[in-house]
Image (cartoon, rainbow, N blue to C red; front, side, top):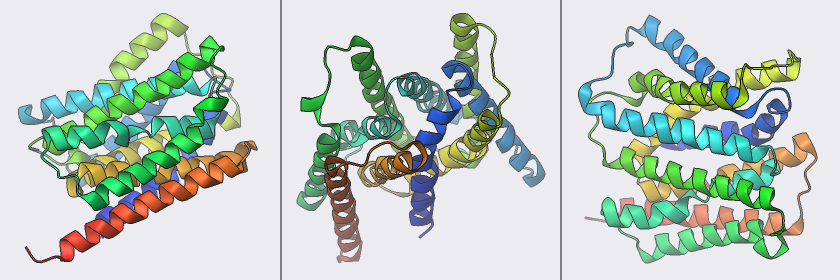
Length: 295
């Protein structure tokens, strides 16, 4: 039940965050937006952990997963997503960045020994079919080089996140995700800040209220809470189930982008949403039946 609740909150927080990031990026450079987000996220986690008496240096056994989560799931994923959002609509960005199951599915079978039963495979194919419908490559402007690169950045973001998911599932943890959360954000913050200083110079925030609340949302909810929750559900549930359930996030991203930014919700988008929901529901149903079946 705990994992289900966390997944539902992640869908809401991260789905809504795609248009929110698009709003915030209009007021500051993309790399500095990412750096401030990670800095606020780390600060939020320190504020939480200090009163609980749980702030401690990460044990040596968790250093590999700390590096993986910090460099891949924090730095690389956020930087690629932010840069792509400058060009790609928020709803479409959410779709492409969550093609993660395309990479997790074979990885989980090859490296983690998770079985691809017929029911789960059908759910995966249904969910990925929804992403293909939403992506609609036939209508894509392949002559626009900047747009092509931005879309490839989103696919690369999905790939690095898939690698982090597989590492989390295969890692033998010495401490909890909550204890590691601020350190992985700091690991991601260092290279992002360096890159921002080199490529963007000094930060140039415009001091607007929109920038303030979008950064606050990103630092506290979309980073501090959500990344800890994502690692937690990755430990509690199979990698394939988690990655497919995360397909609900781009669906929410499309809806919120339509509401907040006025991005069109076309019949193609609706068809893709229905396929994704069907895939998630099928995997959840198959998983429930497998847990009830006698061993």
